[in-house]
Image (cartoon, rainbow, N blue to C red):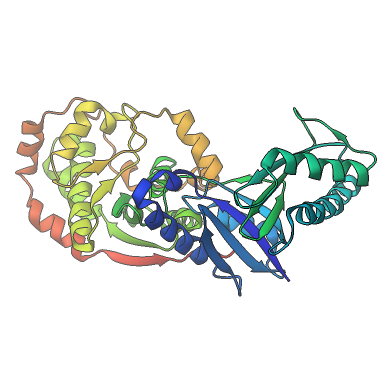
Length: 401
């Protein structure tokens, strides 16, 4: 015996001539997310994706894993009823019998008292049309479940019947997925990942648009602790539920920070450090084949995120910088962090490299010529290359269910 699930493709279904490409990628991602369950089969048929798992695979674990695949709009556990070769009337009678059995279970387990049937005939060769499927199956349920009444507006159960290609599928639940586009359908980008609230959300949102993401993390050991780095790895581990395996480069920024503090105006420390981080990230991104840099910056949130500061920061690099949180306020960002499960880890009180040597009065309206004049006091190329050469790679594997 096996369990059957129907997956709806959401935005991928709107891609016109490219639709098969996105659907194939989605099938691959679902298979990958469910690889821990032996004997899983995933196939796409007429715009839907069907997942089959052995009964030993816990349905709630399968639903959790599959619903977190970007590109999945919704997923439903379904009862599959073979009707190939049957006369339409006999097929609807069989569907009605299975519907009665299902509703009797719901009456006993959940105290259900009202229902409606929503019939759909995807197979136009099936002789009974959609409204008549609904009517006939509904009549069978009323006859077989005496306590039930029809409520077309707010039923306890909406029972869906989908007839297609020699099978009928009976289901009730539609578990929402995150939608978006299949991971890997939009290239690869490098996220500047800190231990805060914002950058993990930025990583999630870019992956949601189909981008494979990897990370670079800056620390200031020994001013920042090993536990602070473990926190970042924990955040990346949570994000693997959505992004799959994550490659993360870690870099000690302390030598650069010390040079800036010794040679440059105090109020420029934050923006100068930020420009070095971008240069280092860009060099790693180009080496690894990443198309763009991704940050968790939100306009005006802190001194380094004013419009003027962002312009000066971007002037340090040639790669495009994506800021998916740019127009969000903190409350919106926190809501997403809670939803995806990163918030509680992000607020753990461990040090961040950005808090080391933090100036009392950071410049909020930096001028590029002045910042470049300050950088002229430093051997920028040597410092950047030394940081890139010191990068340590950590592979964050996807978590088990």
